[in-house]
Length: 546
Image (tube, rainbow, N blue to C red; front, side):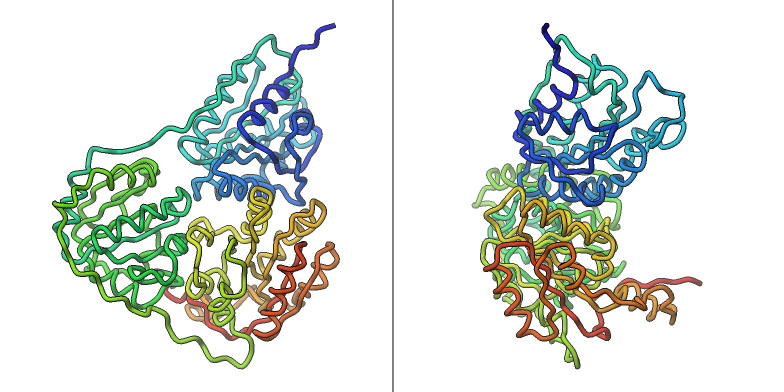
């Protein structure tokens, strides 16, 4: 008897043909058919410990491969647990397919465990604002059209999509199913090319602000070519850290929260901003005074939502893929029609390290890149540790520093580091996180241990929710809810999950732990017991409760 291929068959086969090698999630009844078919078609399943971490892992996989990441959860709470990861992927322009289960369409209206219908947790509706596309597939014969549309959006518009697939639809047999593997489109905006070049030539003090779009699109060489062609200084947003190596003559440091004084001074003295892949959020322009907004703003961004809407400047928009646009624009520049300007002399933008009684995180971050292998990627979580890293860490390989200061999910880098290591096993992958983040999603260490994914986790333990504590203390005089009365013993926790732990209270101990962890080549957790009084570089943002 001939058996028809099911929707689950076609989905798994299509993802395999697309080059997907791993999927991430937590299995359950409503999503079981699709997950098992993925395994049958050669896609390795990495079972997480929390769905949000699995979503972050899929995002790390997508970032490192440039291909589609896949994360799934069951119906109901399994799906709602993925929502944070979906919004994070959207904020970071990462192509992730989120797949959630749903009770059988034939059983709609009957109360069921983990309800995903419109009677309780309507996942298709919930995911719409957190993704570029979200749809419930109600019939098998609708699958190919919806699936083709979803993956085309994810890969060409660079962002997450969501499909909610009922159990009986997953198992429905189809006579035929036309799956179209999308080819990458070159997304270029040519309308303003002459205006862009004219504005740069007319500017007296231009400044390039490199955002995380440079890292996401891989436009590092194009950034350098643009800066060197016109002799323009470059600064980086918190998320753009690593767009240019730390000691390039035209690099003048980070700006905003976790920034340096020199970079912020340039920000306030420039008449033209060339913004490459940054939304110009409060984390980036917090030190830009209203009266110093530039006369002209050239803003490159794949997402036009905030282009030209943040600063009071005449704006020249350039939408589409950043690297594609820069390649096109640089190829069209006539060297004979470029205003020659003297480069700003190189300035040592580094600042004096704090002097503390106990271990200083700033001092650790300032030397860490000297201790680790050249072929590395460092994922950094949200919090004081993240902005200390943004300020002090010296990036030696473009694109090797990954930090989201925009949506800023605590604990995201734990899963992202795991997904990235799966995608790039030849790299040494680090995750810098804090005790607050680690208490949220640190059990994902066990995922890495069980699947032999040797990430090195550095947990900054100051026994408090440090960024919130320091900000609240400064602005309100109170620190309610920011102290851990029973602090975590990170090493004991890590060892209970199967990892090797190191406890460090000095720079020398940290250096030894890094060396040992790299040589060990298995999951390692390095606990940094840092000075609780260290002031993080986050004091630019203030809170007014009056």
